[in-house]
Image 1: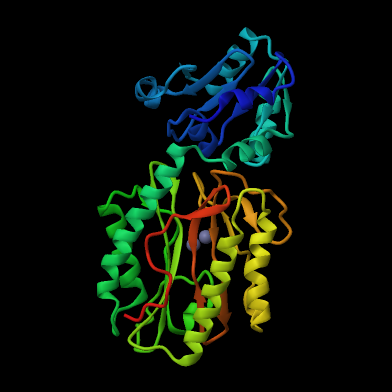
Image 2 (image 1 turned 60 degrees about the vertical axis):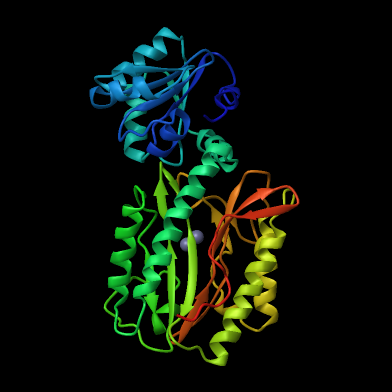
Length: 354
Ligand code: ZN
Ligand code: ZN
């Protein structure tokens, strides 16, 4: 369970409350997944409000100090709670509440609606993963690795990108994934120069690179990994680009230490690729946080000076993309632990020729 006391400390006084409505934040705070509802924080109470569909399951799953309240019409039930607790102003999630919902809340809620700071506070809390959260991310990664290892057996000339993607998705579910973490990227040949290419009918040929950017969701938590493999053979140029990306990845990984900034991790990878003359072909950030969402804080980019702390999980995913020819990306998740980062992947990073 997250440190709910830290969220309570966000409230300036007993007349303020926090109203959490996004699916991700409700799940984060309560540990209970539901497509609708609200999580309310006051100085004295933590309340999960859910409707009839979720009430029984929530009562079984949710632990004190969180109370489960059954709601019929959410706004009315929230007003009742706010009146009981003498709440005069309520913070809402400024990054996820739509303009329309915000206006509805401003009209219908009795307390004054405040739109600054709550999302930033929740994002900051989610930066540091509990050991339980890390275990779920690792389980999602192991599911992905099992599916990946099996699907490599069918990666042969003649198979299409789409066939590989469909099989991977199937295997991720067979091995216990709730779902895939995002639309899987399974691309080959010249399509590998597209960092977010979509699997299509391109047939795998001898001498192609094949890029897998794949992940699973386990109990709400995501995993993220990219491997680029060569089919049957690789030219000297392909090997050289691969080696350049691998060295950039490893340099960034060595920069992932508690106390270092996200910017320094990005710069470690970017400087290496620049020094090899391929800076113009690495147009995205080096990584991102992973957790209940596939992309979360911190963005690992040279302009982000967030200091890395123990139990953050970030990706390291430099790449070089030569338009119309081929691209290489190598991505893994790392857990920040003091002087070094724990590599959460169990699949070798060296060039594999299938
Ligand atoms: Zn990825
Ligand atoms: Zn990623």
